[in-house]
Image (cartoon, rainbow, N blue to C red):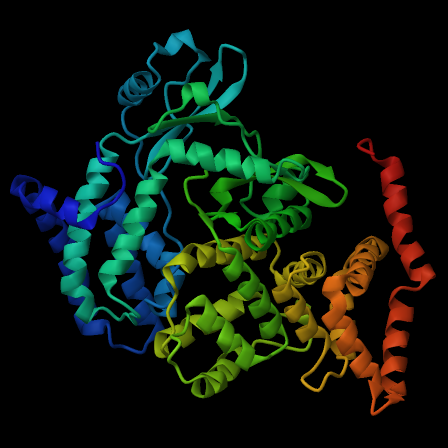
Length: 554
């Protein structure tokens, strides 16, 4: 049994078995050659229509070649450093959709993995799967204890198919990479290796069970997020059984409303839980598409009730990267492109040897145009589109550890915009970042916080404070509920030992040349008075109190 991915080992394994790789490589070469022929004559065209046509041909070829190639296409769809924007747009349409394998074979795999006859532990088991994807099929069944469960069974021979095709893909990639319109920061074989490691993790259902249980623990106290329970007795490396989620598919806003679901409330929960995974837990669901998330019917205080499923593709982000990413969001919003360039260096998007004085104007030109004075007015899709162009033309690359992060964030915003075209993800991201800066009182976070509050001359940026407070409450029916925790956490930080840098800069701002800076103090007092006035906070709390008095959950 093969455990994990090893490029050298798998190459030798396939090399000595020509009867396996020769027929397969002929099929692959014929399919690739047809596409390469079109690419040779049309690949240099600047026409968006022609590039989209090529992307559609690539999409069809990958789908025809099977599960491993479908996954290659999905992986490429998260790599704006590798392919042009037109190709990205087409490849993001790639779906996991293959015909189900035979039902008797599925039952055979299930019984072999569990070790008991089907009727000994299932009261009901259907004759066909309810869903079929590239790596497995899913059945809706009922256990003897009357619990309804989802049983996912891995496709037969999947390890062999993936192992075989990965070797061939790696070999062919070295041959065709010179003619592909790719902007590589490193060898294409490294991309394939990264993909292989991730894919072998995804087909280990024991690992997926561990992932699901870890994810469930992180959200154990969150009443807005549901995670299915893993039934360990009926799970193995090729079978995973979980409690059944009776949810509503996130098809579109009209479909949700027909099922008494408020799309905005579901978006709010999806985005806030996604941001929490990335910036607080450092462990996140890397494939939050509509097939892996369901709306549940009970609404909880203006938030939707969301269920996550399928935990094969999960990833972590280091604490250092998490802090740097938080700073990058702030620097992007504040149009501090020099600091943003330094963030890119820390994160690995730019080489340490790059001359940042040449990069900063590029960042400002490409990204500055999509930013406006209002934090709420821009979304990540516009940023992603511009960034794709930037990375294709300039010396940027996506570090391997960020491929899944980009996939997760872009997928989540895409879902949100699909349900509500006016949705702005930073309407939720920026307030969350601001609150984390106050709560997570370490040196790095405090430094980022001071970057929001003070300019390089130690003057208070009253306009940014005002914009931040506005974004915390905009569109909220309970502004008092939003503002009081901010005031509490801000005061806590200000009087704590860790808040001494903030206190020092605040005093330096208010006292200049042994004189009190009256104008800045007046602006600050005016802002705080208008924002935290008793009337505005009380008015904010009234709707909340009324809703609680009527709620059966209160």
